[in-house]
Amino acid sequence: MSCYLGIDVGTGSARAGVFDSEGRLLGVGSRDTRTWRPAADFAQQSSVDIWRAICASVRKAMDQSGVAPEDIGGIGFDATCSLVVSEGDGAPLSISPDGAPEQDIILWMDHRAISDADEINATGAGVLDYVGKAISPEMEMPKLRWLKSNLPDVWAKAGLFFDLPDWLAWRATGSKTRSLCSSTCKWTYLAHKGQSGEGWDDAFLTRIGLEDLTGEGRTKIGDAFCAPEEPIGSLTSEAADELGLVAGIPVAAGLIDAYSGALGTLGCQPDVAALSERMAVIAGTSTCHIALSSDPVFVPGVWGPYYSVLLPGLWALEGGQSAAGALIDAVIARHSASAELHERAKSSGRSIHRILQELLEEMGQETTVLTTERHVQPDFHGNRAPLADPTRRGAISGLSLDHGMTDLALDYLATLQALAYGTRHVLEEMASRGAPVSTMVVSGGLAKNALFLRELADACGVSVIVPDQQEPVLLGSAMLGAVAGGDYESLEAAMRAMSGPGRVVRPRGDAIARYHDRKYRVFRRMQDDFAAYAELMHSEETEQ
Image (tube, rainbow, N blue to C red; front, side):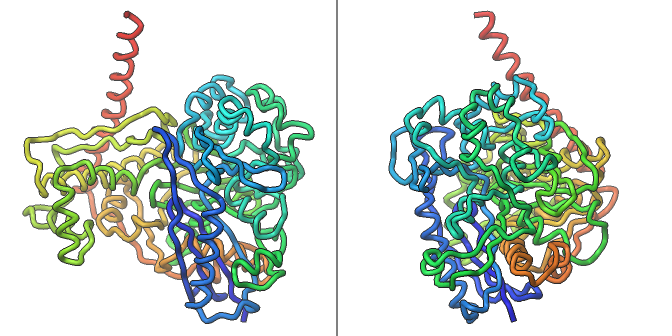
């Protein structure tokens, strides 16, 4: 019986999972990766560090599974949409302003290129229609533009620019073929125009100052592409030795981590909604919202439509929040009761989330309505969708002189609700353009948070499916391996066989819905108020 290896590189760790043909997890391993922050808005990683973490994770997962290396029938990779910069032979080039060695990755959440994104958006180029009319500094073209302007010596030496999922596939196989998923979603490649480089817009690249990447320079960013269903190559002897596997295992074209989560969850049972009415919500450090349609749907502020980046012939829309789990962590960390909370968790062996939820339950009324006077504007790290403004910042309204655990619990609940309202905003914009969603399938760290799931269903007014599968992102990558290895004829067939069941969280009724309607209006007003405050401050600078 063949088994499959899924490998995921998230923001803070590399993980590996071994799955059988029915999607059962047989073994899992993980190791933390390091992030450097040399300045505000900078976040950097090392491909050497990440590959070491992958090798350790794979060996641990294989040992735990008891599966022999020769029984691995295929490998799939997914990773964050981070920029890897290499010399022509693959040697790492530092992208750090201080030239720190091995720091060759600009992490997805790095916002150093905000002004470059603004200047690209000012062109109004046609390719921007496929990123919601506003490119994000989290995407690769602004980062490349920053690199050329600020580190010209590095730019001159660079021979290869990879999205991290593509770098992983290259490291495993030696193939420079790129994934349609990463190139289309984060590099402005237009997959619906072809897979042999036809999707690059040379006029656009020249207009934004990246003419070096046209013509012969195109090899630096990719001139051959694979759809996610296609094998990209076979595991090399060198990589096999490092991973503890055998050479020759088929390796699939990779996915961005959120898309791997979507692949691993959208086929989850029960079948309460058609695939075209489902949206995958991958809620971890950040949140991604991914929905599929048979025809292209253009939604301002929502990335896409992207062709064949997940399932062949279907278009994807991607919304998101730049900070989700990271937002919750920040709200807790800045509160004066944070130390007490962590001490209680340490002494009791309970999670901080369980402690806060118990505090809320003890307040003597329906938990949801405790935040009548407490509201959070969650754009602490900008707004990814649908406002597409990385300069936005957050706010908390309704504070009192209380600074104890009860007050922290209210901040916590209001933050969960604010994340739910951000998702509702994305849903409303999509529905207004002809892409309605009736069911969300949730994965990631916040899928384990029962209070968040309840508030999400109630606030958005749609059913939420929570997969029983504990590692849906790894499962999505393992599905890639299963198809690349030829054991399933398509990703849809792998989804049907491997996704497994889930439980459904439904909205609780009209009274709760009306409460969330009022809070959602406050949420939207706070977003408008932020824009008004920014305008006031800008006007005052102009007067001076």
